[in-house]
Length: 320
Picture 1 (cartoon, rainbow, N blue to C red):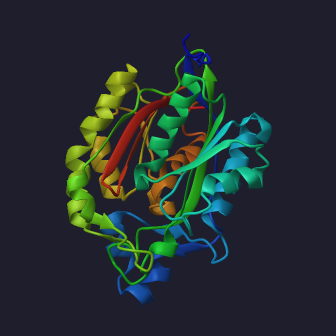
Picture 2: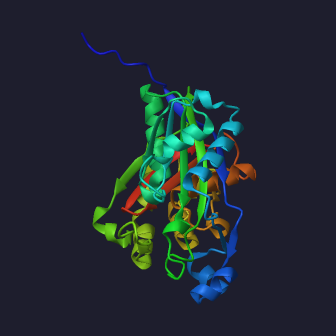
Picture 3: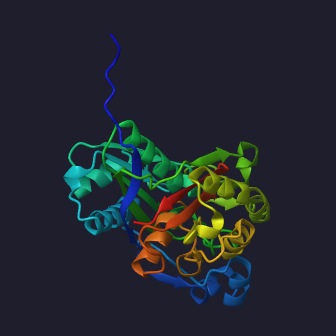
């Protein structure tokens, strides 16, 4: 006698999104005295004008919970409909308990599955793919996916290669079933031989990266991944309404956007105002674009995450 398998959904979609940013805005001028470089130098190299930095008592879980609460409210959903919570983060204060179970408890989600994903800056795209697969397989009906980071806790403010880039925040999405596919196939992978280009040595260390090496890898290796995600989803790049890559720095964002030839797509440039928020950057940028009315509901958007590991993942989604 064979095992019984619960029926899954024929397709999945992002039902709603939400985001959260700390109130503390740190401009390039604010950084200049401690780091020894000015606004023009920073803008020319990474395109960042300001970033949000969490207060000392504000945690990854706090920010994730705030973004998730907004995502639920935006979808008119109550916590009890969530079966699974996934938090993508690489900056938790501790490894146990995981952030997902704490976020679920704070929201009042009753007894969900809960786990964290660490694929660094590609984490949200990885978590979104896992959520979609879970709904299609019948393991869950609604999944809360959150990218949340407190990168400031792991950054050396005096390091010019990281102190000017990384920031804090969170973005969240609720994934649910759909009669028509709204989350395309993921194209993901890793380049472990380059893993030493972005590292945190141990719990007493700060993030270090070889910026030029990462830049060269990103602008030469990732546009084929993005194009393959479009091909698998059956969407021509010229038909995209938005391109939302990880907000690593503005030069990388614009270089990849030019190579995929996305036509009239709105390009996410949230990095200018928000800095590099690692796994939070894609949902944060897309949620803000939706809030500002820059992308229409039902339109296709290409997401592309990439970062430490080195890891990468891309998928086309329908804007909620």
